[in-house]
Length: 204
Image (cartoon, rainbow, N blue to C red):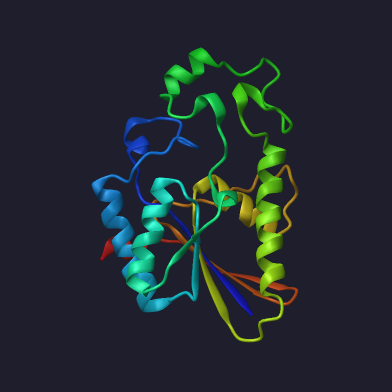
């Protein structure tokens, strides 16, 4: 049986400045650092993982490092866990982005790589590929193996859609707040969502 403990990073500087983040590599804010520390302590006490995989972008990497320090583990970084590649939008304030790169009149289509971005189809495929490789590598392990994945809101949504075989064009969206934690259990062909977007560590 495999458990995926999926964690979003803490608050970043881009959150405060209302910027398109994506591949823009902003640091955690002081509050984000505190959130990461609280999440790490909560995870170590309740759901200590056997390994940690993370996006190499600073906000996710720093959150993963806090968890690793608390759990006495190392972090393996995987570029497939990076946030949506938002091309020329990365780092721009949202008002500026709307002026410089207005959406086409027909709207954004799933295949679009408008403004140098990753298409929605490419993004979903990246999540599918990551999950397929991960589950294949774990298939012969008989004991419970818990993997902590530290990533970003968009990628966490894509991983959830991939895990649950949701249609490509789905109106279902998974909410994940700062250091929101999800637990997904996979036992053969059975998949169970144990909990979603836990943030009780922030209320301590």
